[in-house]
Length: 209
Image 1 (tube, helix red, strand yellow):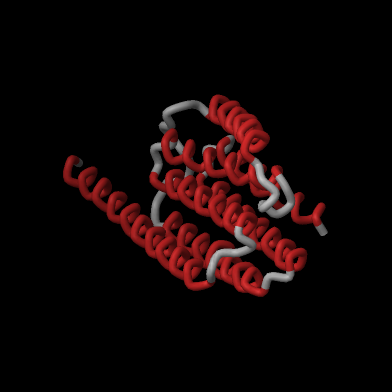
Image 2: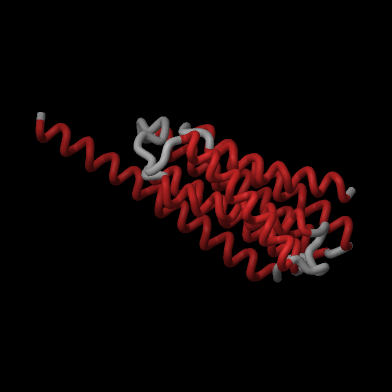
């Protein structure tokens, strides 16, 4: 069971690195949904391993919101725009992949220095949580398309949930609901913002013509 949990955790990091290496928005949303599914399965493995009932709720909430609801709204918003890919990032895609690898290495070094035994399944999970967090922050900073920045934000959120479910054997249920509703609200607001920005640019183009 430990091996399955570690596999799911590794796939969370792999999906983050793939997002750093892809300029395509639709693929990025699919990667986020896949990453969230891996997070849910990891949480289920920790729940079975530690016999923590609250983690079963965390598994269900992650499936409902992160795997289904949020990607649905992102795909729905994407269809209303003609944005297909990241066009003007601060650094190129090859540089992003190299930076993501460097952040993973840095996370491993930090984990070896400060790791404690309270983290489920050992230092690997701490390394993955920190690396995923840093890669998400990198996406928010280096990408200029709002969709890509949203994906970076959501990646950070998944990293925090991974760490929370590993360090504390699950966050209190009311806290998880609060965080997820705030996250969903943020995604909805940003989705509306993207649509309004797109409409404004179309109107300006029509006026100039």
